[in-house]
Image 1 (cartoon, rainbow, N blue to C red):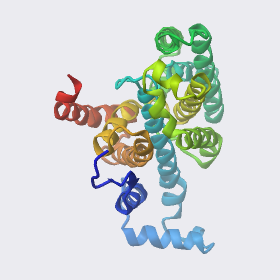
Image 2 (tube, rainbow, N blue to C red; image 1 turned 180 degrees about the horizontal axis):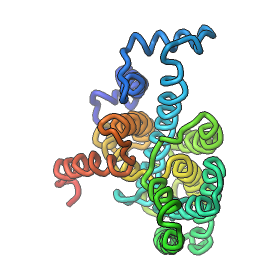
Image 3 (cartoon, rainbow, N blue to C red; image 1 turned 180 degrees about the vertical axis):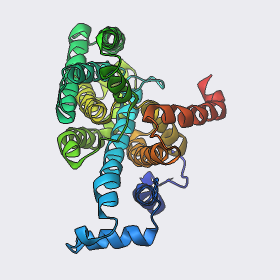
Image 4 (tube, one colour; image 1 turned 30 degrees about the horizontal axis):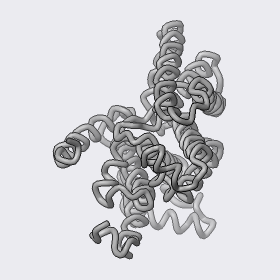
Amino acid sequence: MKDNLWIRNNHFTLLSYALMFITPIVFALIALCSGRMFLSVKEVVDTLMMVINGKGEEAEFYSIIMNIRLPRIIMAIIVGMGLSLAGSTFQSLFSNPLATPDILGVTSGTCVGAILAILLGRSILEVQLIALVFGLAAVWITMKVAGNDTERSIVFLVLSGVIISSLFNAVGSLLKYTADPTSKLPEITYWLMGSFASASYTKILIGSPLILIGVAVIYLLRWKLNILSLSEDEAKASGMDIRKIRLAFILASTLITASSVSMCGQVGWIGLLVPHLSRMLVGSNNRYVIPISMSIGAAFMIAIDTMSRSISVIELPLSILTAIVGAPIFISLLRRNRKNLR
C-alpha cells in the first residue's frame, strides 16, 4: 500500500491517530453546545468541571447537559461506531460493496420485536429488550435456513437473509395494520424512523455491553477479514478455520446491529456510507478501514443527531437526515470512483 496522510510504512501515522481520537471529541463538544438553547464552550466546560468536582447539581446547566444532551451523545457515539463497523465487516465478509448491517435480517427482526412490544404497552426498556431478542432470533433463523453448505454458504446466507428480512417486514406491516391509528401507530412509526430522544443512561447500560463486545471481537480479528474477502479456495489455503472465523464476524456484527437498533430504532445509510468513506481515505486493508470507520461513524452520528434536534422546532427522525445527507455524499463517491467500479 502506498504511503499517504494516514498510512506510512504500513502503520497509522501519528496524525491519523490524533484525528481518529480528536474528531469525535470535537463533534461531541459542539453537540453539547448546540440545541434549541445554545450554550457557550465555557459554560459547557465549567459545568463538566463542576460535575467532576462533585458539585454538578449546583451548575446552572446541569440538567440540560448531563440529563438530556450527554446521554444522546454517548448513545450516538456507540451506535454510530457500531453500525459503521458492522457495515465494514459485512462488505468485506460478503465481498459486496452494497452490504449493510441488516443484510441478514437483523433490523427487520428487531423492528418486529419493537412493534409487538409497543402494541402490548410495554415500557421503553422492555421495548428495547424485546426488540433485541427478536433481532438475534431473526439472524438465527437466517443461519438455520442457510444450512452448513460451506461451498456455497455465503450465497445461501445472503439469500436466506433476504427471505427472512422480507418475512419479518411482512409481519411488521401486518402488526402496524392492526395498530390503533390514533395512539399506537404514531408511536410505532416514530420508533421505526429512528431517534435518540429517549436516550438515557439506563438504556445505554443495557444496550452498550453487547455492542462493545462485538466491536472488540471485530477489532481484534480485523486482519482476518482481509483473508475472508479472498475467494473461497484462497481463504482455505491460508490454513484458517474459515467457517468459525466467518461465524465469529457474523455473530459480532449481529450483536452490534441488534443492540443498536433496539436502542434507537432504524438508522439507515451509516452502515453503507461510512465504510466507503473510510476506504477512500486508507484503501481496502481492513487493519486500517475498521478503526477509521469507528471514528468517522461516531462523528457522523453525533452530527446527524445534533442536526435532528437543532434545525427544526420539531425533532426530525434520524433516518430522514441520514438519507438526505448520505445520499449526495454517496453519489459523489460513486462518481469519483466510477473507473474502479467498471
